[in-house]
Amino acid sequence: MKELAIEARDLVKTYPGNVRALDELSFAVAGGTIFGLLGPNGAGKSTTVKVLNTLTRPDSGVARVGGLDVIRQPDAVRHAIGSVAQRSGVDVNASGRENLTLQGRFHGLGGAELKTRVASLLDRFLLTPAADREARTYSGGMQRKLDVAMGLIHRPRVLFLDEPTTGLDPEARSDLWKEITRLAHDDGITVLLTTHYLEEADRLAHRLAIVDRGRVVAEGTPDALKGELSGDAVQIELSETPGDSAVAALLSSVRTVHDVTVTGSTVRARADHGGSAVPAMITALEAGGARVSSVRVTRPSLDDVYLRHTGRTFNEADQA
Amino acid sequence: MTALMHTWFMTVRHLRALMRQPWWIAISLVQPITYLLLYGQVFSRIVELPGFHAPNYVTYVTPGIVIMMALFGGGWNGMGIIAEIDRGVMDRFLVAPVSRAAIIAGRLVQMSIITVVQAAMMLGLGWVLGARFEGGFTGLAVLMLCAVLVALPFGALSNAMALVIRRQESVIGASNFILLPMTFLSPVFMAPTLMPRWVQRVSLVNPVAWSVETARSALSAHADWRLIGTRLVWLAALGLASAWLAARAFRSYQKSI
Image (spheres, rainbow over the protein chains, first blue to last red):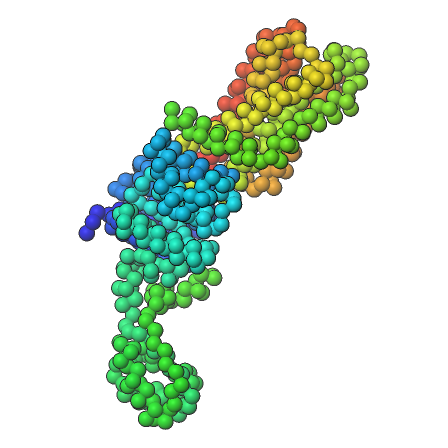
């Protein structure tokens, strides 16, 4: 186990009007990994980032970033981290190069060193052709890239990305995903990523914590979390059915299948190994007089994980 | 040292943003010219009133309008900070090791530079229109100082108000409500002795009045240095008090994040 890059213990933060944004939230991130905080809007993800990047103080709890206490040593933390907020922090009246240069100056860089660093970041994020244009002329994807580049100017050890791909088109999103993966793998930067896209957390994060109502309700690798759910989901559509209870009775003879529910022509079940259970299920059904029109087997998704830990589907929670 | 450097970085950033706005430059040039021509013409015969001691109205009103422009420049300074909060630029600075004082100080330094440039332009135009100042170079320097010392406290207060209210419409309303009466409750356009008694009394505690009187005295042939000295001290004290308020407002913003 590498040393911990981020450590949050029992963070509590209450906003006026008795809104408890963080409710004893705890998690830890190992150095050089990508950690995802997954949750619907209003779960407390952004507040967690704001506590860790020194923007706000928690009411209670302990938080350390790179071994530094965010409450007692905020300035040292600011030197060690890069932080990209949900809202762009780009000054749209300045060019990309000016934004980067200014950010570098505040981190104590200057002279030829800063110039080269700015040029190399512009190159890396494919912004060189637009470098001297005002950022107001940039597309959403370009502004986001500039945002991330600004967070990297001083070679931070820890990078916070708060919903980095929200509002981006699919192409810009996949570009950014590649870049985020590269940051952890090639540069050894610890990345804390918040997202309300299940797919994004699944693709990028080595480990993730599911946040709901200011608490971590589940934590682990995406695969381990999904593995907690026993087996695959199998959905069978019937073109002819001998009746709900008859269908259920037919499937009870297949031993690897459980949690069978039948509603009219749709059969849902869980199976330890969906692929190998399907032939037996079809044989049993057809032998009993049912006709199968289609079969679908799906791996458990993080949506299922979320449902299991919070009792709500992700979409319900996101719209609440 | 860091705070000073960061203030300068911020100043340059704000100046550059303005220089990229041709409309802003055009309006800032045209507005004082219009004021000087308009007020200079409309009220030109006021000087004929008994008790109005001035060679001509342009000479009288030019320093007044310089101070009025400084007041307005300061009074609207807070608008920009709301835009920066809304765009996330402010929080971006706060998560970086940026000197906190520089975030406001940079805005105020930029505003002071613009105040001085605008004042110089108006003085040039005033001279073309017939304004003559016996106080010479010292008098002009005192006028510039007065303009900056009016712009600074109102700039700081405007930023403080913006940081607390954080809504552009509300700040526009409040600024309008304050700035115009401040101008007319002072001898910007009218000789103090000819103003109604209650206005004269109010103008005693009006910083706009302090600075207009100070500037006019310094620009006249017989500068009253005691008056100039005390008023400049009052203005500086007001500036310090406003800076303290702005710092408190800034802390309240930080707490609200």
